[in-house]
Length: 370
Image (tube, rainbow, N blue to C red; front, side, top):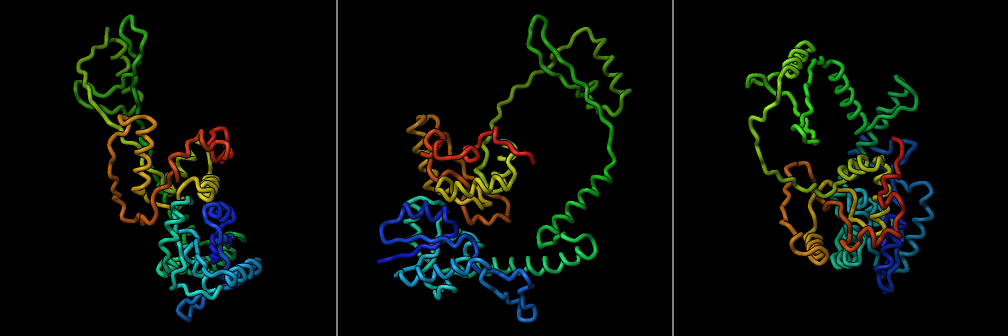
């Protein structure tokens, strides 16, 4: 029995092929194979905004190859990415191959591991038309706004500019924010700091002026700062009046979402968002991390149990700590995919270093100018 598995990228196809038994073939679409035409609007506005899809230029031979492979196969499984774009690609491919999108032809996994792939094959489903229609609505809006606004910008502002469903709104927000900054009236303020040490003690600590005669005082000008400075200079000695001791606890950072991964990579390594996503995509396709496009901090229960076992076996039970339940207060979080995490806790830096390039390791020396 021959089964054809269709994924998006050749790198992912190569990784998945290693985990599948004999009789399985894996082919890649290399992204979208069908889309709206570039040379025209491609939307029938008068006909309920029906999109006019065509085969993307250069993808004809690939689509023919997929059709030939599908004819030779007993089963075709669509294993594109588990998001709106991936669902739309599966829908387009199913239609192009003469498959019924409503049949059990779609598999979904969030990490490229043997366990996840086998579990996906055991839970074949139909193409999710809600996701397909969500992607289609976004694509239509992109085209309607972009193809209407961009020519207007070429005519009125400058040739080559572009406008879109997202970037036009973001530009407006940036402009409004810049106007707020320009309208801001700065207020003068001063800080008065003093380096202190106990006589004979080499350790210094910093004291910051807070109040005068028990009353909180804000230093608003140089004259007030000079007056207070003279009072301090004329003081024969500083005296500790009150010492407060408090216990504080610091919660560990939440697991990575797409945005927090990008922010951390920029702060720690100087990576641009594009560079971070390029590296993360490669790690995902090679089976090192879970799906990289997510807004959730939730972790899969099996990942939590694997991590607990690893901590106990490696460091001892005293390092296990208490597991906390993270509840998201943001109603806009879709929570369709778990947070970004290593696909296996056994993939320690020492264990996989030789299989990664410098960017994937995350060397701080690999900085780029931004």
